Structure formats: C-alpha cells, structure tokens
Image (cartoon, rainbow, N blue to C red):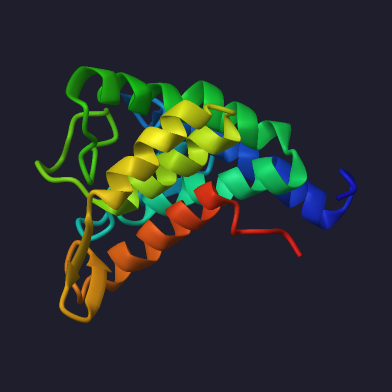
Length: 185
C-alpha cells in the first residue's frame, strides 16, 4: 500500500494510536494491553472511555485486536504490527503465563486480572500474537490451552459450552491460524 495514499495514511495513524494505547491511557501507564474502549481528546491523546458500559479493560472487545494485527504481520509482513505485538503486547502475557501458567479471560488496563476464569477467546489472541512474533513454542502452549476447553458430549462437540458462540468462533480462529488454515487470497 503506498504510504502517501489515504489508506496508507490511515494505516500509519492507526498504528501510531495503537502504540500510544499500549503505552498509556490518560493518567494510567500501560503494560502493553489495549482497552476495549477509549476516546481521543482534542489534543489527540488517548483517554479512558467515559461511560460505565464502555470500559477500558482488555477484554471481550479488545481481545480480537491481536488476532487482526497478527494477520497484518503474517500476511503483509507489516513491521509495525510485528513490533507492536512482539515488543508491547506479548511480553505481558508471557510474564503472566510464566508466573501463573494461565491467563485470565479479562484484564484491567493496568494488567491486573479482572476476572478469575479463563477463556479460549484470550488464548486465541495471544496465540496469534505469538505467531506474528515468531514464537512458535509459546503459540503451541496457547493452542494446547485452547484445546483444553474442547468438550464432546454425544453428537455435540464444542468449546466451553454448546451455546457460547463467541468462544466457539475464537477457539476455531485461533486454532485455524495456528494450523495454517487462514490464508490470504
């Protein structure tokens, strides 16, 4: 994509904002996570979202972002995506994994777990980031963790619970990316 095109400019500005979001949000120092929601003030600085229903945790909304950034890295060899995932995002989760051998389903922006349960949604995003960063061993650990959510009862096979559409999708997307089934056309 030409750097001077409208799309090239949007790409550049988006990655600048994502970099800022990983570093801090308002007065809060960042640990490499992205908020589910935020706002940008008139000076162009990221700030926490101002409504209770639009929080700044790294959770169900933002958990999708590393997977999408990983596609930029893997498909388009986008160095900005690789750098953001490898230098900002992934180190936080590697430390969490090394300390606890599990990842929470949701984290507060400061890195503290927001819940005391796991989800394949979180593992799918971290798996994608590990692939983009070239850390196949960590990606394999994340794939194994996603598979630990797999259940089979009678003629039903699912992740977590049969009616958890979001978990089903993200478990599949994480594992499909890991297996090389997600291809650029």
